[in-house]
Length: 107
Image (cartoon, rainbow, N blue to C red; front, side, top):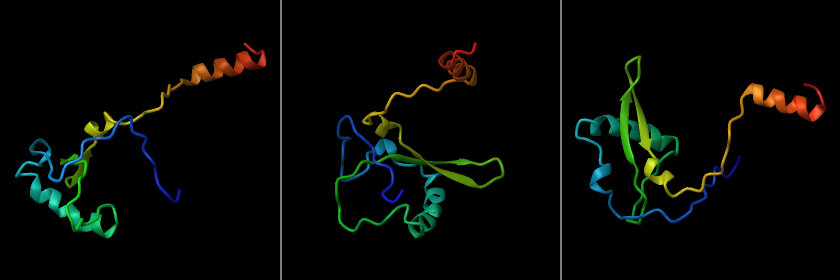
């Protein structure tokens, strides 16, 4: 993949120049979240935006891993409301085997 994943939207998500208050991290989470920024910048996962532009903002937060350090999470649940998601049904091994048996005449 050279271009990455392209998302299809059912409607345009709301854009704003500033993050809404309800998605701002708590004061206790802020230093932990900030500690991730240098690595995310160096890996081109995030970038600095020099001039204000309308954006969709998602809530960042952290959870502590079992072995101690924190994991950064970006809550995309609000964005999911605007996505077209193709229907996909997970089949079990038994359903697949049964389907193969019926299509070949074996039961």
